[in-house]
Amino acid sequence: MPTTLLRADEIDRIIERLASQVIERHGQCDGLVLLGIQRRGVDIAKRLGAVLNQRLGREVLFCSLDINLYRDDWTTPLGKPVIGESFIPVSLDGKDVLLVDDVLFTGRTIRAALEAILDYGRPRRVELLVLVDRGHRELPIHADYVGRSVNTARDEQVNVLLHERDGKDEVTIERA
Image (cartoon, rainbow, N blue to C red; front, side, top):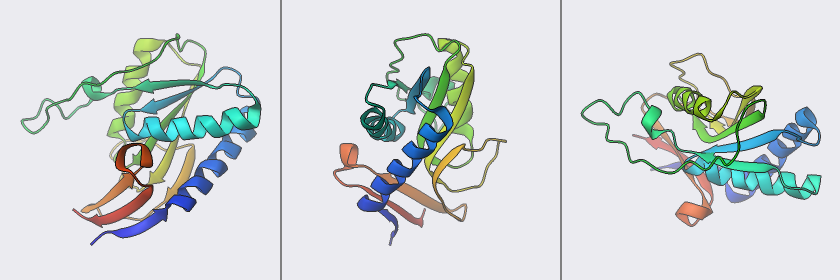
């Protein structure tokens, strides 16, 4: 039976808080690129972007990144990548990239994203924003902005449900 970690109203408040933290660090966000990792990272980045756009009175550049070809597990018999689309209409050279994902776990998805980003240029800086950090890193990666840190067991699963894909907003945890 899943346990609810975050409800819709809490997710909304977290995104508002994260937007405040981004503005605090980046001011008018000139040169900032929001880069959501397919799939739910894209949805979170869009929501974050909407809040930033409203507060700043202008559009912050939004892009999306598919990292499936860069994953280190697709060569195993269990891994069969489903290739999606990346949408990055500009060079990332010299930009501040805010990489956005739903859950930070082992760090392997972020490693793949960092490798993929280099195909689009050499950013000035890459920061990481996640809705949930559940620990258990296998690589030395940390998030610069964290919505909620949660202590989990390795055999637990954190499920992020978002209205755009799942019809409701909720984060749950359950035994795998």
